[in-house]
Amino acid sequence: MSKLDNPLSIYKVLPKSNCKLCGAPTCLAFAAAIIKGDKRINECPHLEKEALEELNGQIVRQMTPEEQLKQILVPLKEEILNVDFSAAVERLGAKLSGDKLTVKCLGKDFTVDSKGNFISDCHINVWVIVPLLNYIIHSAGKDLSGKWVTFKELSSDTVWISFFEKRFEEPLKQLIDSYPDLIEDLILIFNGKPVENSYSSDISLVLYPLPKVPLLICYKKPVEDLKSQLNIFFDMTADENLKIDSIYRLCVGLLVMFQKIASRHT
Image 1 (cartoon, rainbow, N blue to C red):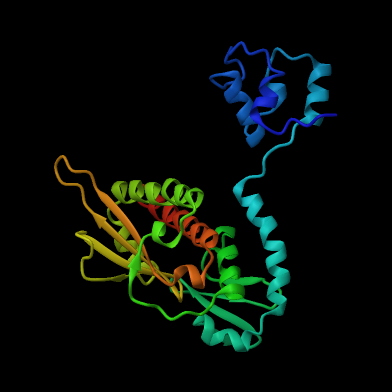
Image 2: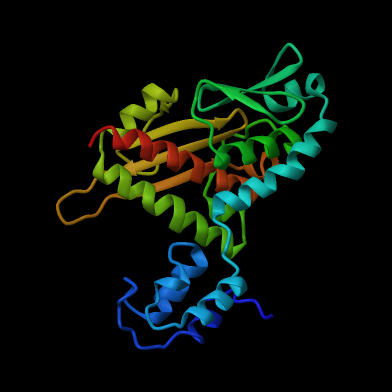
């Protein structure tokens, strides 16, 4: 039995009438929604019951990004068994809490045991935990250089650059545009440190998602016909202290936190 694991393969078995009775604008959009898990094939009113039963057994739904990260957690929790916490303290800018390791994330304590289980007063989401485990396991412990660079300067991988721009920079800019007080919240809640205005910005703020992976947010407010501008910078040692994919995931985790904070203003 062949698998239906992409929108096009599902589209081929649909009537292609674009009737919209399923709630999607086109049959192709319906097929894409099925793969994502947002729709079920039986929502198409034109397919016979026997065909639906067979097709249901063939459809392979894509995992959500969160589900993918939960899979990534499994080998990381095995790798952390080999980390000597006492020897890692200086490398990570962390501290020992008994037999556990405590790392500051945005000014909040995240304590991990030798099995990769975390305790924190702060909301724990998988977008933050995966990069945090990667930081503990793989960070080179490079001291900060004090030189700020863009994500593009850290990575030449166009895929990660595109993800970073579309899923972090752009939505963060929209968020700050909509909630100007968000910057003040970040300072208060996450121990953000205002710095002298950099890169022609109105607001420059340094956050420490991890002790040796700081983030510089530079925001220029909109003026008359000029749109706002947002620039994100990292210390040039960032990719040695955290892998590029984890830098991206960490930033998305931060965005999730920021969105929760902004929602309190609505």
